[in-house]
Image 1: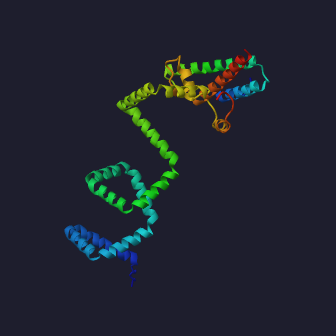
Image 2: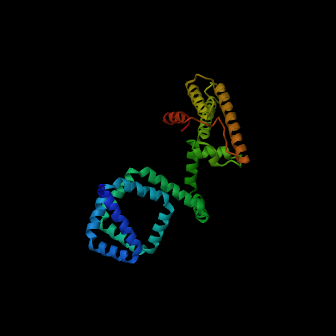
Image 3: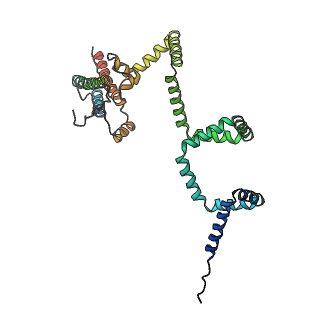
Length: 216
Length: 85
């Protein structure tokens, strides 16, 4: 007599699964209803199981999420934009409510953040303003006009500032000297090292001039 | 002139030392004037090259302007005094 082999637990589970999948294919609608009923009946049990699963596979899931985000960056951005446009009022109200509730904490955090990254913030602000100004021609002309007006009305202050630039050998003054007779060169074309070297030449020449005047 | 004057910062250093020597009375004003004139001519030739590059629409690759990062950091820490203020 040949002895029949006993099935292992895994083989039994795989058999059940096979039979269930076959039944599912044949009775799709019934399977959906059955799944719905099961979900409604065991809501809390499923929640707990999911929680357990998430805790156990935390690192793996985080990696998966990151990979998905990197692959579908544009799609995710699109989705978030669409969601924001659809629910704009709701989101803004929620934000406002949160701000009103935790005003003091938020302001404290913002202050700390600003004090930590003061230099970067100020630099970014200045660069953004400059970009905006350069992009907007009307705004640029407005500012230039205002500066011209101010110079006309406050001539004495402008003169004092100009004299100060000459005495202290400011970068602006040296660049002006270098670009005076060459219309193709602009302030931005001259490197800082060149300006520094030229400043030393002027210093030497001035000292020599002073010596000559004393001798006379 | 030294062999060190192969870039702008070298020239700057040389001029600063010349300035100190003139103030101390170690050099005659005539020699200092000559070195200042030569430096001015060198710088004007660099300026001319810059202008030429601007007209041609190419990015200037002048060895005289190029400076090592370590050298620049050293110069930033050690600012040269002198001159009118």
